[in-house]
Image (cartoon, rainbow, N blue to C red; front, side, top):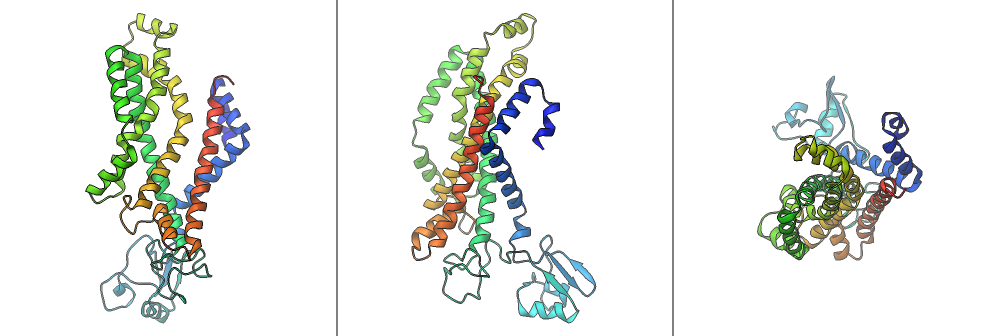
Length: 345
């Protein structure tokens, strides 16, 4: 698919894309990561305690997308149907109905009440990676945890990159007092113990996805400022920038059209590494109990369970393997992007 983009790009970007594809490790890591991420986006279709499809009395029902009450299947109560209940199964079977469940018939918060041993239960035909100490399927929690980790990291990376590029552009382009004040602020702000502050701030309120995102955004934007600032300091004195200024072009247009494209090269090469840092920080906070709300599908919480249940090694091994694969793929992608945009090549 990337080969099809080559004719549509200018010669410089064509060379960059070819260099990226020449790094086979990074190239295939990108495709593997995208495949895993796309699969995780459809986690409800892979791991869910609700059927994908129910045929009842000649009608089609899609519980994975819509909530249905017991009364819709001939029950007595207007509560949401429990499709694993023998009562609901009998009601559906009476009308020659049937159900199609996902490959993993458990959601991230589903508890398996039919365990043959006390939780945490080892891997079995029902629970491929075993269960945690509350009887929840580890495979389902890994899939949902992968999705929320990547979505969190992507959102944080995009927003922090926008702020970091904007701050670095202002400092580098205007220089003088703007640059001096900005640098002194960054020196003070970056000297703060980030993880300890995150723990303190997260302990004041009930943590959730957006609250954690806001807290981490206070510090994550600084990683790009120095890189973008250096590009603007170098680019503001180039001849074509002076010519644009002599022609009466405004500062905003000069920054956006002439200098920013060069600064985006370094920004793109840094993004995979910002992603890995965001995932690592979220996992650390979840491990320490200051991350996502209790019960959320969290890889860090799974690591903490592995630490607390050494007799159940599948807990720690599952979380460790998922984190290792995810971070390794991102590092390989980052290395390939860095080589592709390296001006010395």
